[in-house]
Image (cartoon, rainbow, N blue to C red; front, side, top):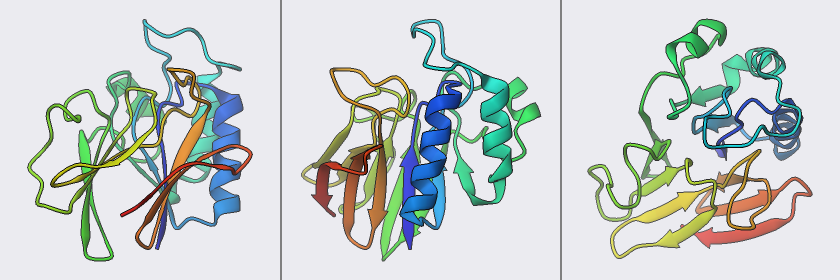
Amino acid sequence: MKLMFASDIHGSAYYCEKMIEAYKKEKADRLILLGDLLYHGPRNDLPKEYAPKKVIAMLNAIKNEICAIRGNCDAEVDQMVLEFPIMADYCILFLNGRTIYASHGHIYHTDNLPPLKKGDIFIQGHTHVLMAQKDEAVILLNPGSISLPKENNEQTYGIIEENNFQIKNFNYDVVKELRL
């Protein structure tokens, strides 16, 4: 199974379209959205082509392929227009005998991890900063931001396939890689 992880679209129709193109090109089995889908938030500048209604239409068109969790900028009103669930604070996935705990990052994050067993994977968004590292006990991942990257990063997404995690840009170049 191949999973694509993306976070922090923040209402950018431009980058949402690029994300969906990447999802199709990657031929991933599922698109896992790590929150902050429609609203840019009070601390962020408007992303390129800020158009939440267009993002709604693009995401609803692939609703059966999405697993999403709530970010700190997502609200119940967003759930009213999206045709797939987004209000869960986390999701737990099982892949190749591993547990993947996915969260946006505003509740559970690297300084406040959920209950995990040794070897489990924790993936979050929220910081807009990509990360792939092995801790003493767990693997910590962040695919970065689709639309508003920080700390001089570029727009990125993550792919988990077999026992490998890759962070890629929209040129499909591998920016960071970690053997899981």
